[in-house]
Length: 128
Image 1 (cartoon, helix red, strand yellow):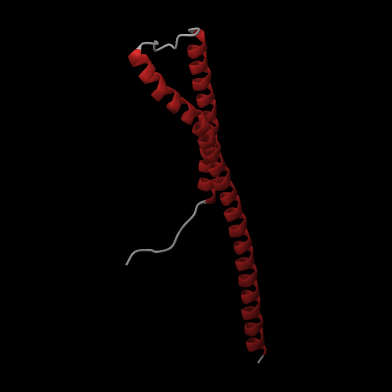
Image 2 (cartoon, rainbow, N blue to C red):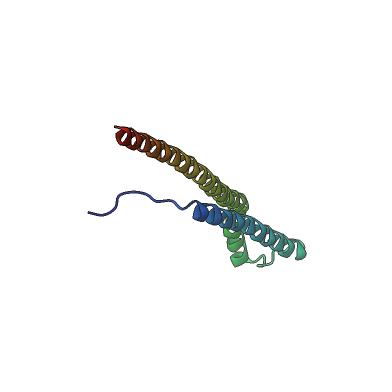
């Protein structure tokens, strides 16, 4: 039978969470650069769209504008969500690390108490 326990490494959670946060930030920067580039292309041509204003250009424009507008709405949101997930993984790692330290301290205190109890019992047996 396999090991059904979950093991978490706090340093990995914190480190990878930070990397995910950076990916979200980089994605936001790349999306902004894309939108600025598209805006420059669209405005640089004057009244005629860069793909032309013939029949084929009109069809392309309808599809393109829908996709462009959808990307402008969704890409910044996706960047925020990716960065937010990274922050949550980092916070999870910090909480896990703190919990492990607290449990280690409790275990050490319990072990010290047990050792003290055993020691006093041994001392009592010696005096008998």
